[in-house]
Length: 138
Image 1 (cartoon, rainbow, N blue to C red):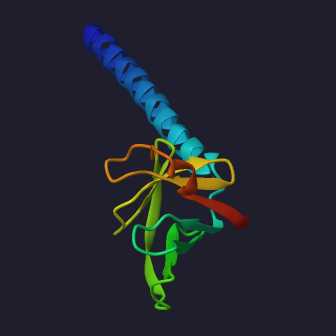
Image 2: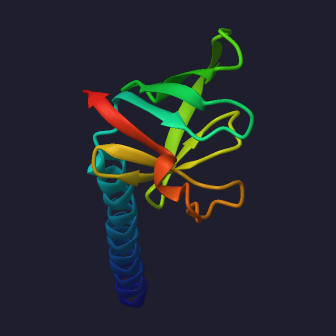
């Protein structure tokens, strides 16, 4: 009978140790996700005039809301007065802002967003510095 008590005690101790290790690992994962989530204060309004192949510029306004929704407005300056609007959800992954239903992503920089090309790389060439949306309010 005594051997069964020792085995039960050992099993209970092992179970307790394993559960503590798993909780610590889970806590580390959660705290990393929380740090990434709060690393940037992205909510606010961003504006810029992005380059356009067949117009003067693409006047762009992006509003990022605290509830992880966005509203994107843009107009082709010199081509049309029509205002285009898209709404959806946003997320951050590895310092890149992803907008649902949008082809372009944005590199997160201090108080601005830099549009990436369609393959997710930074823009290059003479106009590379023009693909910027500056934060205009919190």
